[in-house]
View: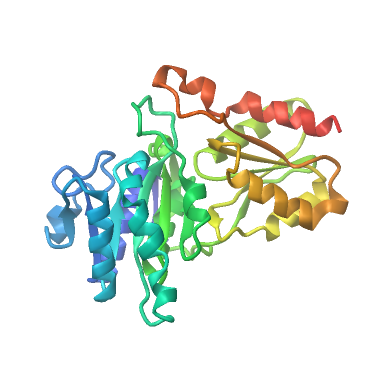
Length: 326
């Protein structure tokens, strides 16, 4: 079995390459993704090998990128659109929620929309305004869209291929500050299902849920808590729409406590929906309220302040203390 040590960025590059090799209808579109290879070099070398007709450098017009992708999908192509930074997706928001998400239902199932919208999301890279957003709740709230948030090279490599092969539109969130994280990837393995949660660390005292960039933070918190004699079970949600809560329910019924961690502002973030559903399902098992650890309810701050804004190990451990205090 072929195994390579890859960063998340390189895993995405190889996953895109394999998808393009397997299906000539896969077309990549985005700003500076061709000769430059993208701001984060995720598409590096792909235009050279597949040509300008399949790796298309687009104008700086996100609405145009998604509108063109809709037309391509109608004609049987599988467009993969790169949004250069998360904050740049909003000019395309109308196309995504009114066209991409609805055409399959509007056509009574006769017109699938196999579009993947790749978005580097979250903070932690010291960028300027509009470059560090967490827009996942907007898309998870929109019926007709699937929303995936990878946290590691294995899921990046297999997940991008699975998203491209999926018949419905997928918003594919990539944790930009984790692009350089490394792990071994089995290039010929049988991947886990795309829309499923995974227990990444077992524990008995508190269930901690995270996705994307916060999975590493949750694991770091679990290591620190273990030094204090507390056992945290960490679950990588992997997909935020649809939510796979079966492993979560099983865990919470055992631990009796749950904390949801994400970078997005806490109010009406994904943690709100998750907390409500866990409370509905596990009410009689809970020893404490489901707690949320998120970004503050403010616009993303200047880069010098982002360490104060982003949830970190200490804020997760503080939530663990509060949960254990009930």
